[in-house]
Image (cartoon, helix red, strand yellow):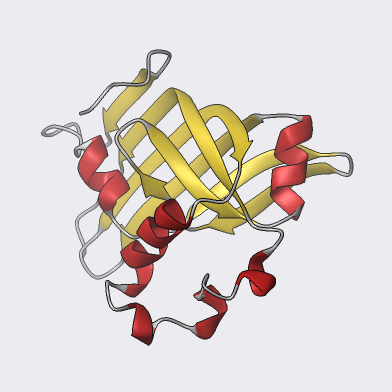
Length: 160
């Protein structure tokens, strides 16, 4: 596992069956999964499903105007990411706590995130994600999350 983030600490690595090693964190974060971003707002706790990219040091998320504004006010956040397959019994979970920094929009990072979910052929992407039409994306930012703690759990089970 890459550990360039100086403050990151894995506080738990657990396989519920008690057998074998837990999955590889870098490989898990390379999967095109949804993350659930938990953060605070003036109206209370919030949760936002997000696409993300992991560069080996930071987690990157494309942000509009709502959750980035909340993160500017209070950068503490958490991500929950689950890869579950009922057919095989695979159940992998990663929880990350850290601090978010709202950054200016960067087309290259945004495209790296979108390639994970839509593939490399940009002509096949939904037009809502065409960042060449700048007028459609004037509020977009990037959120960079620095990991502080990580929990990794393999809760896979035998399918009957």
